[in-house]
Length: 131
Image (cartoon, rainbow, N blue to C red):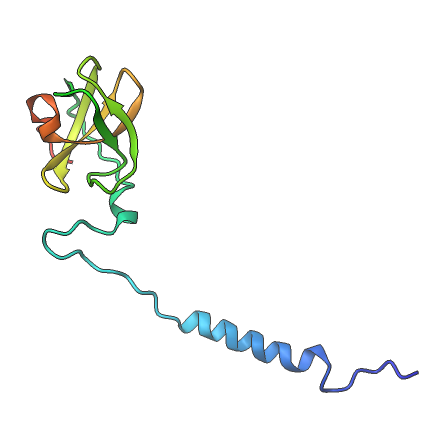
C-alpha cells in the first residue's frame, strides 16, 4: 500500500496560498470610520454611551422630579443605569451638550450610580462646570 500523498492532496500546496490570500485581504482592508455626526445628530451610540465626564468642581444637587433616568451617556438612546428621585442626594460633576439639552455627569449618592441626566430634570439645571 502506498501512503505517499499526491501533490494534489498535500496540505502544503493549497493551504499556504489560501492563508496568504486571507492575510493580505485582512492587511489591505480599509477600516471604515463613520466620521463626525451631522449637525443636530448624536454621535454613533458606541461612542456616545461610554463617556465618563469628570471635573474638580463637584457640587451638591438633586433631581427636580421623581423617576429621572440616569444614563450611560448624554443621549436618550444610551442605556439606563438607574433612576433618581427628589429624595436622593446627588453630586454634580460637569455638563456637556447632548440630545435635546445639556446633560450633567453625576453621582447619585443614595444609590451609588454614576451617569448622565438631562439638565432640565435637575435642580439648578445641573452642573455649571463644562466637562
